[in-house]
Image (tube, rainbow, N blue to C red; front, side, top):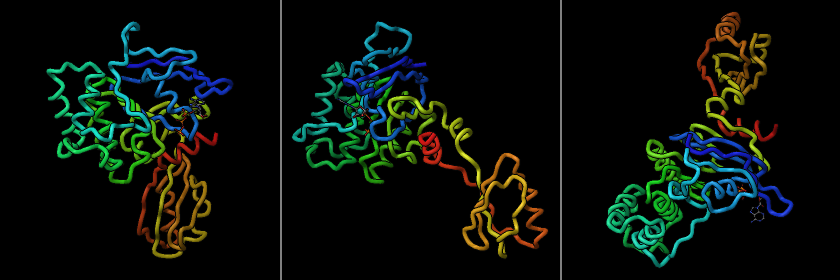
Amino acid sequence: MLVEIKHLKKSYKQHQAVNGISFQIEKGSCVALLGPNGAGKTTTLQMLAGMLTPTSGTIQFGENTNRDFRQQIGFLPQHPSFFNWMTPVEFLQFVGKLSHIPQSKLSSKIEETLEFVSLQDVKAKRIGGFSGGMKQRLGLAQALLHKPELLILDEPVSALDPDGRRDVIEIIQQLKSTMTILFSTHVLHDAEQVCDSVIMLKQGEIAWNGSLEELRGKHTTSSYKIQTDQSLTGKLDGVIGIDSIEYLSSHTAKLHVNEAFQTNVLLHKLIEHNLTLCHFEQIQDSLEDAYMKVMNQ
Ligand SMILES: Nc1ncnc2c1ncn2[C@@H]1O[C@H](COP(=O)(O)OP(=O)(O)OP(=O)(O)O)[C@@H](O)[C@H]1O
């Protein structure tokens, strides 16, 4: 276990932005923090990054309670700001000095990090002319420069176009083997590509905390899409295990099934009606479906 958060609260006057949440982050995991606008994601991440003081509760990083854990954290804020007149190399030199990277190692670390985020070719250009995607990769570079143990990213993909999102997701994918990652996002499809576990916040409280597998097991259902050579209408009535049938056309249907569903029973029924199966596909609910179920509970 890398971080243990206990009863963490942040209130602004009467408003409870984060209302006593507790969770652990396992070393080497990639955790997605999800929730609607105002759920408390940024507030939580800023408290973990040491940028905001909790009203109450504790954040314990590793075994040693006395260590200043901020040195082990890399943080990419939701709206990173840059000095537009600087070049990426100048900006990272500035950041490196702030995080006390020894001067002797700084230049090589900067080169290595810019290479990693694919900004090597523009390292001497002014940041002011960069696209949103390039700025986000530079933001990632500043968070990574000191090789943190825990990388915290606040909405790293939400403001990006599909290309920019793919670049950032690929970077996160590569980083997964070298550090622990906690990131917030509204883009559930991207979260699903990289995270191993999910924490969902709703009005400052945890609505779900667990692995992606557990979430799928508990909150997603199976369904099947089938197509036959003749009309299906009414032919599958009474098949054990089918909860409901959604007809997509007269020959095609989506079957919402329960645990008792057996493909053989379905096949028997089709044979009984002299129907030939042309297409059979199992469809798994997405993270978005599970998210909607948890949020609407
Ligand atoms: N400095 C502040 N003063 C007063 N209220 C605040 C402050 N910062 C955040 N809040 C409130 O705390 C709640 C949680 O905000 P937070 O930014 O953490 O949510 P979020 O989940 O990150 O939302 P989003 O997805 O929109 O970024 C919101 O109701 C917000 O209005």
